[in-house]
Image (tube, rainbow, N blue to C red; front, side, top):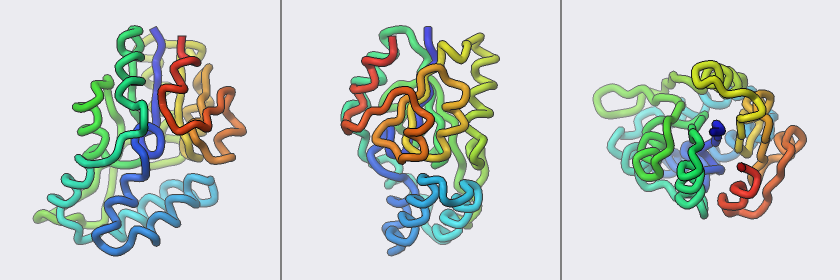
Amino acid sequence: MKLVVMDFDSTLMDGETIDFLAEPLGLKEKVALITERAMRGELDFFESLTTRVQLLEGLETAAVERICHNLPLMPGAEETVAKLKEAGHKVVVFSGGFRTATGHAREILGFDADFANVLHAKEGRLTGLVGGDMMFDFSKGDMLQRLQSILGITKEETVAVGDGANDRSMFAHAGTRIAFCAKEILKKEANVIVDRKNLTEILAYVS
């Protein structure tokens, strides 16, 4: 058995959840620019996340659910998760995004667990505040170490798949480090690089 930890935004899902959420507010381009800089490692992840979520203040929670339940999956996502599960691997998703999105994806794809952040809301609207498991640059690596300890899984038995700067911390604790259609900052720390936009490409590297 291996532990396969996958990023969500721009890895398992084709795009960035927060950019989709900003669209009905007319802020998609502004938020996407911050997201892009954060994923390139040019901004502190915590600061960029809280800045972007503040811009979502006032968005109706009904709209959040509707958007998060209709996000486009990455080509090959369903087949990839299914084949990893068939092979007996544990498949876990880490996301600097939001559990509204990852939880719905888990229901569809059937991966084992998801760790993400939670958008705070009052009276049916977002307050612009956020909290959760994946708020910092170090969060994914920290959570991965905890999971390895619980499951009795070694670094060599761990596969990490991601695309952005905040995936570096989990790469540090994975034997197989797959940069999927990734930013240069992450490619430098990968030992597998996949540039074809189909998630099934990673299956060749997970035995």
